[in-house]
Picture 1 (cartoon, protein in one colour):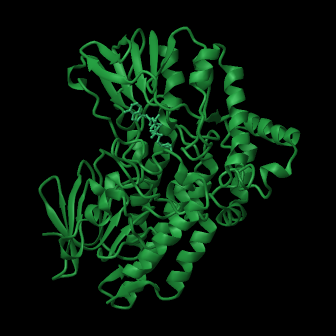
Picture 2 (tube, helix red, strand yellow):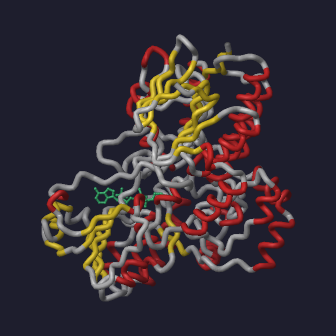
Picture 3 (tube, helix red, strand yellow):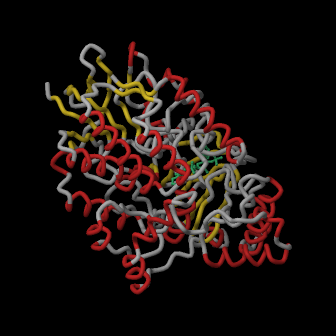
Length: 530
Ligand code: NA7
């Protein structure tokens, strides 16, 4: 049986950088990846219109000055093919592929207390052992297709945005249904509408979407960014979310007059991007939040010509508590003659038929259906692996299917020694610039492992009291905001029957980074080490 120092799951941003650091530390590592190649979520999400909602200049690694200089993004919000090219470039530059085993799923990982190692089994029937077991599975990698009645008898083509085919898909001349209007649906809908004979959008919850205002990068701008990267990086590390785009406002929405506020919203709408950072209380005070909600609702009424359709597209909940979306021509799409919006809250989906989809009140003939129904987020990909720590306890049971997630710093959990979760639940993860949060986690884990190796430590494990305190702190911080009040994949409400304790640390990346650094500086305070 092969033995490695570390097993890493996933060859996306997390797994690739983790592998690089482990190698630099002189350790042997094996990465397992289900896909045929590197890229993680950017390998799978090939749907039309797929692009990032973090500005490109922040959506890259910073650990290598040379890498920063030799890669140039073409536009403000990079499209999926360009991000995938970037990850291929990283894999080539650091010769990473030779330690990645593709087309391989990790089925189980059991901690063997007798030898203090992880036994990791893969779907090719092999088992390997390793001292360290590191998850780079990502927060949004386990796609979710609701169990619609009759789906098995539907004769048309079926796609999920999160597992899109590698061959081009043409919707020309087709009657297409898109179910779901989260980021993926909102990005895909205008593109599919431009091709399809007719597009039916099945919307459960209306979205607050603001223009991305994407544009090609000006060469002089990119050169300026590259010349000043260290300063930019230092500024970003002091931010809340990991970019300098719209840092958290320093005043309340009510410190401005209504006229000033509307001017600010109007300017932000023109510049593009999310709006919840514009005032400091937009994510903490419902009445402040309502001012931005009303502004966006007004925009929807302005853009969408048919008032009945505009009304269906108008959200009523708080802005930002459900992941807000950025779009390119989303609301405008509903002015097209070949697009029909179906409100499936008012007229629920009943079942698929061999030729289409039936709601309670109507029938829609479809040649193809696109599930833009999202992910079993945050815990889904981890729970797909049978992870067992001490005494054979499964991670899934320990976290009560997600209802009682407990971690220390979002990096480790008691009873699961030498296991680390890159951007795991209870870290800033999806409410930060993922790439830089990944870098921070990978570097922290790398330093921790080096500390262990240098000091002859066999096992490191979060203390139960450390994770209880961290989880409590996480919830207190979240409860001081409006985020937990939303219905979102942030808390699992997009998936039928899923209940998840709010899984994101919301104090901001700079606060979080300081805490993690302090723990490391205090000889990994809060961890048992033996
Ligand atoms: P999301 O944001 O979870 O969106 C999923 C969408 O699918 C959302 O509109 C859901 O409605 C809808 N949905 C889910 N289940 C159903 C059923 N059963 N019937 C009808 N509609 C349904 O996933 P995305 O892939 O768009 O985006 C995920 C993240 O990836 C995104 O936020 C970025 O960070 C990148 P709901 O709102 O739950 O009522």
